[in-house]
Amino acid sequence: MARNKIALIGAGQIGGTLAHLIGLKQLGDVVLFDVMEGVPQGKALDIAESSPVNDFDARFTGTNSYDAIEGADVCIVTAGVPRKPGMSRDDLLNTNYKIMSDVVGKVVKYSPDCILIVVSNPLYAMAQAAYKLSGFPRERVIGMAGVLDSARFRAFIADELKVSVENVTAFVLGGHGDTMVPLSRYSTVAGIPITELIAPDRLAQLVQRTRDGGAEIVKYLKTGSAYYAPSSAATEMAEAILKDKKKILPCAAYLEGEYGIKGLYVGVPCKLGEKGIEQIIQIKLTAEEQAALNKSADAVKELCGVIGV
Ligand SMILES: NC(=O)c1ccc[n+]([C@@H]2O[C@H](COP(=O)([O-])OP(=O)(O)OC[C@H]3O[C@@H](n4cnc5c(N)ncnc54)[C@H](O)[C@@H]3O)[C@@H](O)[C@H]2O)c1
Image (tube, rainbow, N blue to C red; front, side, top):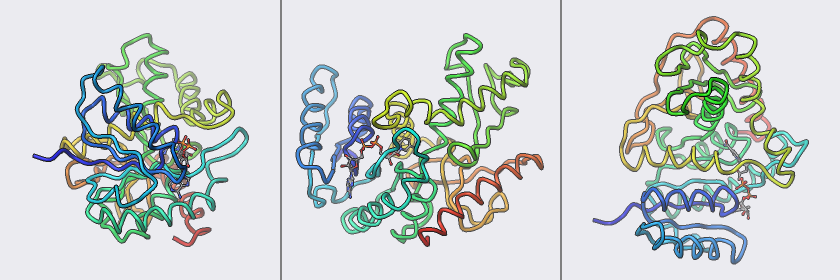
């Protein structure tokens, strides 16, 4: 039986880290593509040389030529420019849209049956662009943001209560950053709602820190943005698909009336399996939560309007 094939478009900080994590998790053979000559080749070789120590069998190919991605089962797009201090994700819109247009055309040509996971920012507009440009069904174009946002929220809650991260589940809806909608009443520690364990004003501070999670790291790094946690998040989504886990994860999905929103990518809980998004899970929201989600959708709509997708 052939191994799965995972194509990583963009071999920068996230692309390289993703390749390593995918190797460690033995999800399949990896093709790292980038327009920069030598970078994908060097990273692929370096990771391949770690495989005897870490005991994984997989082929790592670094390339500047799209034909190497032919027949990939999953393509993860991280191509684009990241933020620098003082920049918002939205500042990347026009540059990354141009890159996305080029990338998606090639993905459709060489891996027409793949499931496409979009990571490049601004995430929701890039996911919408990838969906529109690819012509793929919505099940096969998924954006990564919610898994990262909820991981950050979980890490902060675990640290606050000095409990294992394994005990903490968190639930977020909506956009990345300012328009994220964390549902505290569905976030738990060993099954106990966090609203019973953390005072409201302190919880509000943790939520705000989660919203600003990306900027906090950009400020430290100065030359780029977070990549370890984003790579872990995208790997979890790829694993759920490649192992047909039917795992419920917060993803950017194209809504066709769910949550009262139509024709836009918004962050909602999705069941991920071999077909990609196999179900969008709908839950009842309070009026306040629905208003926050609508605001999040409006922000996505505005950005999509600028690039006409
Ligand atoms: N969705 C999220 O939650 C999330 C989190 C963090 C970062 N990001 C975004 O992910 C993207 C990648 O971040 P990074 O830190 O890996 O950046 P990076 O600069 O390290 O890597 C990006 C890579 O894309 C390559 N590239 C540029 N144009 C290309 C093209 N036309 N085809 C193929 N490759 C091309 C560059 O050469 C570079 O190697 C950024 O847009 C960043 O904002 C998203």
